[in-house]
Every structure is written in C-alpha cells, then in structure tokens.
Length: 185
Image (cartoon, rainbow, N blue to C red):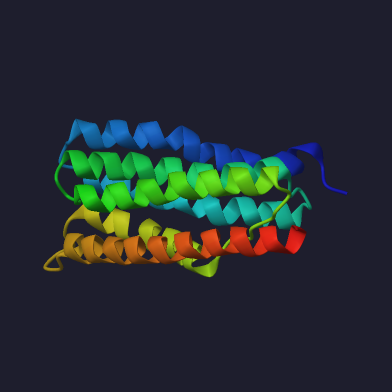
C-alpha cells in the first residue's frame, strides 16, 4: 500500500508546471544573456514532470479524475507562458499562437460538453505528439543557437508541425465526441 505522500506525488508534479509557468515568463521577460538557456533548462525540467506525474500515478495507483483534468491544463499553461513570451519577442508568428490557443479552447469546450453528456473522449495520439513536439521545439527557440547550429529555426519549424498536429487532433476530438454521442443515444 502506498503512503499518503506517494499518493500526492502525481498532483505535486502537475501543480509544479502551473507554478513554473509564471516563473518562466519572468525569466524570459528579464531578457538577460542567460535567459534563453535558463528558460530552456526550466522548461525541459517542467516538461519532464508531465511524464513523471503519469509514472507516479501508475506506480502508486494514484490516478484520479482531478489528475486527468489538471494534467493537460498544466501542460497548456506552461506552453502558453512560453508562447506568450516568444510572441512578445517576435520569435513565433501570431497565427501559430492563435491556432494553438484556439484549438485548446475549442477542445476544452468539447470535453465539457462531452462530460455533461457522459461521453468519454480518450486522448488522441496526434494530440500527444503535438505536445511532445512543442516540449522539444520551445527550448530550441529559447536557446536560439548552439555553436554553429541555428536551433531556433529548427524549433520554429517543429512548432509549425505541432500546429498541424494540433489541427488534426482537434478534428479527431470533434469526431470522437460525435461518435461517442451516437453510441449513448
């Protein structure tokens, strides 16, 4: 049997991403010579908590409805903090940020309606890939370059790939809702 603190570890990992988001924004806002590298390191560590919360939840049998609800919100807040600052400095396109944010708001609405109709929509692979690519691309944009390698460009184009995956997963969630609704009628 797991101890109480072990049962709480997954939520602590999830909440840490929420707590880190404004810290990340502050470090980027300072715009010091070290801000990009420090932000990349913090973002990577925070991204690893996304894996860690799921690992701990399964290991300690601490999966919860709250954890399933808060995990994607924590991811979105971390990514949103990064995108806002990257947009502020002109490192990403407004359309990119709009599409990613609009999709997330739309999916949040679909999930709310689905829950009200007792329809469960499972996470889709394209959505998971979208998040994974964002978690890789954003630190590259923060760092800008590593030696002769323009990793900012790699991150920028990888983020556009995540936009495409975001649109595909948005369509999948919409279809998933309507398919699930038909199953319950």
